[in-house]
Image 1 (cartoon, rainbow, N blue to C red):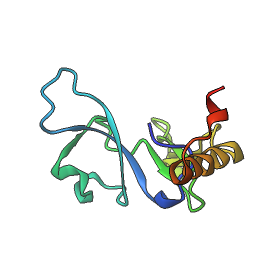
Image 2 (image 1 turned 180 degrees about the vertical axis):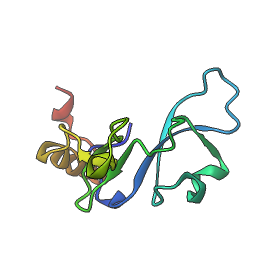
Image 3 (image 1 turned 45 degrees about the horizontal axis):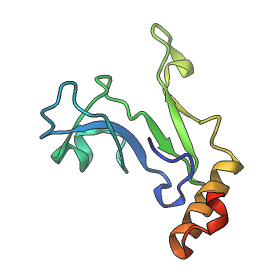
Length: 117
């Protein structure tokens, strides 16, 4: 699954996809990001097929880098409520940002021995 905080993915949409060459049934679900909210304009379509048949990205990173989940329009609604929207994931908070920064530190310097105790 996508990380709950990733400043490198600001403004990117997260798509639920499977590889075109995946012969397993059902195909393995992957999560990939792309800057487009329209499947026909993503670079993913060259090597992946969408898993979600509704045509919506399953999530999006906001301008701060926090993961937001997609809320589809309510069936039969009209007006402003018929618009789909992205809402920050409940677990995407300051803790997610700290975990991201911790992982970066571990990548740069190696995991300290005390982390395994």
